[in-house]
Every structure is written in structure tokens, then in C-alpha cells.
Length: 256
Image (cartoon, rainbow, N blue to C red; front, side):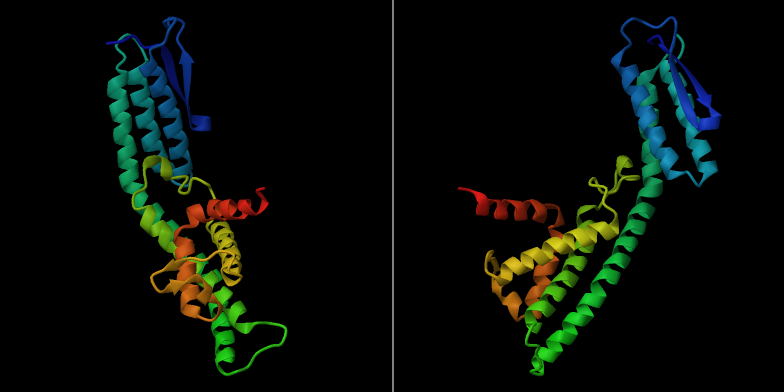
């Protein structure tokens, strides 16, 4: 057993664990003890965020972290490897307990915002397409193109929602407080991706960019709402890469 190099105590007022280097500490503190200390601190921060409104649950996990820290870092019989295993067990327990609830809550919120942003555009787009079918048009506005851009936007909202459901099948412990690495809120994610989709739609209409999947041709977005909707869904599903793709495509315009 290794010698512990820390004094570990609780600070109840700040809901914090205090780590102090022992006066009898080795000159070179073992790496496993350093790793345990930083891992406990990171875990405590996540627990503090998760259970800020649940004092009982926080106290339970706080006590577990305090005890395993003392086992791994204090006195002459410190067992950092055992504490690390105990810490992983605590993480797994919290993940199993909270990941499903957090994922479902985020998915519901994202879906609700997608519906709020997508349905009005779909209704207006459908109405304009109806007018077009009836032969009603406005001299200063191409109803079909404008309508299908709105339909494209709606498809993008659905695509973004599906993207999260498909790609984030499992949340790890570190994902419980930061679900998306770019830290965009659902509303901003939808608006940002939708705006990029509209730019792509304009590029499709002007034939600056052309794609085809089987019989699905991007140029048909001009007069086919189904094509517009499907392209929107595809762009939403690929929300993580369409920004960089658009940058690469437009960068060629300025290359000598």
C-alpha cells in the first residue's frame, strides 16, 4: 500500500471537498494519486450541477466521493486504485440513473422547439404552393421557390431532431451536464442549422451546387415541395458537417 500524500476534508458551506498536500508528502506525488484527485474534482462538479435542486441525492454522492478520496489519498495505507474503481462505480450508477431521463428531456425540448419553428413555415409554404396550383401568383415574388424554401426549413427542423435521436444513442457520464459539445441550446441549434439549410436551398435553386440521390435532384427544389422537404431532412441529419461543407464550397469562389 502506498503512502497518502494529501489531507482530505469537507467544506459543507461550499459543498466542496478540500484537498491539501500533507506536510509529510513525498517530493514526487504518485501519478495515480494526482489522477484520482482531479477525477474526483471533475466528478464533484458534474454532481453539483446535476443535483443542485436535489440536496438529498447530492449529499449521498458527496459523502461517497469524500470517503473514497480519503481511502485513496490519506494516511499510510492509501489505496488509490481501489478508490478509482469505487469512483467509476459511482459514475456508472449516476449515469444509469440519469442518462435516460436527461436524454429524453432534451429530445422532448428539441422536438418541441422544432415543432414551434417548423410548423408555421410549413403552413405558409403549403398555402403558397396551393395558390401556385390554383394559378395565383405574385408578380414580385416567385411563390413556388419561396414556398419550397419554407418547406426546406421545416424538413431541416425534423432532420435536426432525428439527428440527435440517431447519433446520441448513449450518454456517458461527462455528457450528463453538457449534452452537445458545441453547447448550443436547442433553439439556437435549430435556427443556425435552418439558416445554413436556406443558404444551401438558394444555392440549389441557382444551380451553384447540384446533388442527386437516385431520382432526387436538388434543382427540383424549385417546383417540388417533396424534394425540398427531403433535402431539408438530409441537411438537418448532417447538421454537424453542413457548416464546414458550405465553407469549403464557397471558399473556392475566392481562390485564384
